[in-house]
Structures are given as structure tokens and as C-alpha cells.
Length: 230
Ligand code: DC
Image (cartoon, rainbow, N blue to C red; front, top):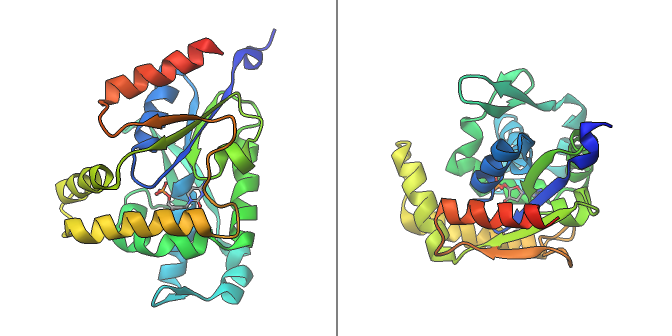
């Protein structure tokens, strides 16, 4: 009997900067599943737009972006040094660069473009064909894998999320203020929840995980308990 028969799809959606990827990565490691950070794909397309002047003052040149989509190749490649699936853009590892605050500040309007979503959703669905995958994002349980066996909707209070992201970026040496990070988080939530294309919302059968006051271990145990129940 194929091993895939026992494997499931775990969809983790939720608000910006609440640790979805961290939890998803750890769950994938525990279960020996593939981990895919779908936000990294939207960030890579945004990086392409920034490099090719397709965004000016936060406004995306949508006709130009549509015309360029055939030239944007986004993929994941396993990095054996970090044990992580790094994101590559047109033959270049951009795993670090896509995390810069300038990318965070410009990603929302790019992720709202229907053609961008269609392209990336098709790639994501292909990656989940054999199951055994943990994917995090905004529309994974609602659009990408509506039949996922386990759907989790993660959230945390905005101040808690901003503090975590501030610590993370300053530890990497980025010069950022707490206020601009908090503003960006609140603005991205608003944008993600109100956009027309695949807005962020909790799938009907998703279970909510508010991790404002939970440690990483507690979150991991919580998710593993949900997996065990399936
Ligand atoms: O998870 P993240 O913060 O790295 O995602 C970056 C942006 O991409 C986020 O502001 C919304 C968008 N996104 C999306 O629209 N759909 C997804 N499945 C994942 C991310």
C-alpha cells in the first residue's frame, strides 16, 4: 500500500507575522512532510516587481506585471545547510532578500492581482498532489486545498506580533522601528482581509489557534494533537 494514503494536507492560514511558517516548518519536520511557505512565492514576485520598476509609490503597474508573468520563474530548492526549502527567483536564491521590510511593504497589492494568484495557486496545488505537505499562507484552506484534512487559522494580538517581528528583524541587523512594523502588520491584515481576490478568511472547518501567549513548544503540541485526532 502506498505511503501517501496515510499522508494528509495541513493548511495553515492566518494573520501576518503570527509565526505560521515557524509552526508549519516544525510540524513538517516532525511528520517528515514537505513544508511550503506560500507567502515566500508572493514575496518573490514582489521582489521581481521592485527590481523591474513595476511598483512605484506602492502602485503596481498591473498591465506590465501581467505581461511579465511568463518571465517570472519561482521555485523552491532544498538547502542542505539549513535543511530548508529556499525560494529561488529566476535562478537566484532570494530567501534572505524577500524578508526585507521593503518587500513586506509592497507585497499586498502584488498578491491582490488575480493573474499572480492563478499562477502561484496552480504551482502550490501541484506541490500538494502527493499530500504529505504543510503549507502556510492566506488562502490555503479556502482556495488552494479546500479539501485539506487539517485546517488551522492562526492569529495573535497585533502588538505581540509586531514585537516578535521587530526582534527578528533587528537581530538580523535591519534598521527598523517598532511603529513601522506594527503599522505594516495592521495594514497587511486589512489589505489581505478586504481584497477582492481570495481574501484572508477562516475556512469554515478551520480550527483557530491564537498563540499570543503560547510558547513554540505549546503550539507544536497543540497542532500535533490535532493531527493525532485525524
Ligand atoms: O506570509 P507572508 O507574510 O510572508 O506573506 C506575504 C504576503 O503575501 C502577505 O501580506 C499576503 C500574501 N499572501 C497571500 O496573499 N496568499 C498566500 N497564500 C500567502 C501570502
